[in-house]
Amino acid sequence: GNTQGQISDTSSFEHTLDDASEILWIVPMSNLLIGTVGGEWRMYGRNGLLTATDAVALRQSNYGCSRINPVVVGQAVMGAGSRERLLRAYKWDYANDAYGGKDVSHCADHLFARRSIGELAYQYEPKALVWVVMSDGALLSCTYMNEEEVLGWSRHDTDGRFETVATMVSEDA
Image (cartoon, rainbow, N blue to C red; front, side, top):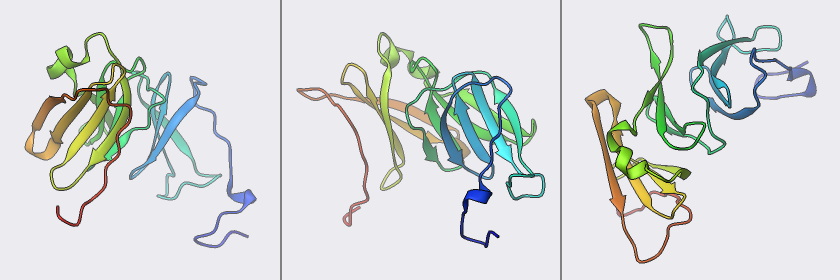
């Protein structure tokens, strides 16, 4: 049998989503949040434990996602839209009992014009920022503090092009 903390081949299972879209990413939150080309899903077990015999998948939206790995920012999952032209924050909406996908790039459309998202990274210290590398080598940052209703965007210029981004905590931070 399967003991707690161990996974065996008998622990695996298959589950087909209604739209049969390819799964692009899975993020573990209080439920599994699943991003596909055709939309966003949450998967959970009715008794609080997801198992092969107790798996429920519910569509959360039909926005669609990108292959770009999303980032977790507090209680939200931030990911690129299906055409990589906008950034959405998927956060649990208690009123609707579902994850809502809010476009957090709408207030900075000028920073996303004629380019697409290439990569995301999240920095939580010393200031919480989502870093976004764009297809033309531009680097953007997003300050997102949902609880305080703070959302802001900045562009960071250099003499060259940004190709990738990563974050780490410094001892001096």
